[in-house]
Amino acid sequence: MFKDFLLSPPLLKAVEALGYTEPTPIQLRAIPVVLEGRDLMAAAQTGTGKTAAFGLPLLERLLQNPVRQRAPRALILVPTRELAAQVSDACRAMARNLPIRGALIYGGVSAKPQLDALAGGVDLVIATPGRLLDHLESRAVDLSKIEMLVLDEADRMLDMGFIRPIRRIIAALPAMRQSLMFSATFSDDIRVLAKSLLRDPVIIDVSPRNAPPELVDHSIYHVDSSAKHPLLTRLIVDGDMRQILVFTRTKHGANRLAERLVRDGLACAAIHGNKSQGARTRALDDFKQGRIRVLVATDIAARGLDITELPHVVNFELPHVPEDYVHRIGRTGRAGLRGKALSLVSRDERERLRAIEKLLGRAIPVAA
Ligand code: AMP
Image (cartoon, rainbow, N blue to C red; front, side, top):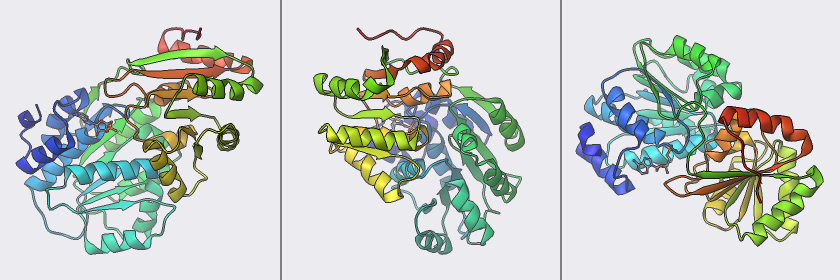
């Protein structure tokens, strides 16, 4: 029960309004540790409830020790604009009854509203590293009063090459602070970063390393590259599939496939790093609302998308990195619903399939 965590009544009310009745495993284990003021290193993927696992105790700690100042007291760093927006929405919902002000900072949009928000004074900053570093260098943000730092999806931040901005940002923080790190995997790089960042951390691993979500049916189709597109269209139409997230390896591949599916008469959009923030938000919104049936995405663009209860994930191409297979299918089978993950595997991808099966510790069945 959430009330066992001794959260303040306004936070408990917000949790109730969100419809959360039972804490998820990561929440059960992380919330008391964070409330105690300890550092934390947690292995948890999107979909486990990790945002509330750090958001609730972070807000509680800010609330318990009110300080009026212009400089922010807590910083949440995330890899992508989508995740920043999503974490911000979640924090806003949790803090709806609290006198806590937040700012959302990411690139690809005008800096002016962000600068205005920072100048007005905020308690909590949610940011992607690049744009935050810009604001730090132009002295638009003062990070010297940060009491709590959260690195969310730390592994993806390293994959995206954010290590330098992260280190520069951390160098601007006070040494006396509480630090929390969330990562889908604990790679060697992550361990090195954790060592330099965390002090005597409590380590929590709710999803055994690289275990795929349980409620997903996986299957593969062996198919020539040139036959993948017609097969996908047939599977979608014959199976009356709705809300399908399709992964391609490249931005170009995502665009090309989306164009072909549109020509087949399927409502479809592509989402990747070259698209403007507006276009990405719109595509995601259309997808969530059911106005588009197929969303084609690259791994980086899809990271951090919050689409709950997604029934279908299709790997149009297998990822280069086997762990990305687990990330991709982590989008389906959520919230107790059974999801389906289909992979279209061409001859030249057999090696990649073997690497994925090795990681999963089992073979993926071939679809009948
Ligand atoms: P996250 O892993 O933080 O992206 O959360 C995944 C989804 O689970 C989000 O839609 C949350 O709103 C939802 N969620 C988080 N905690 C709970 C909970 N205790 N009960 C039900 N849903 C939750």
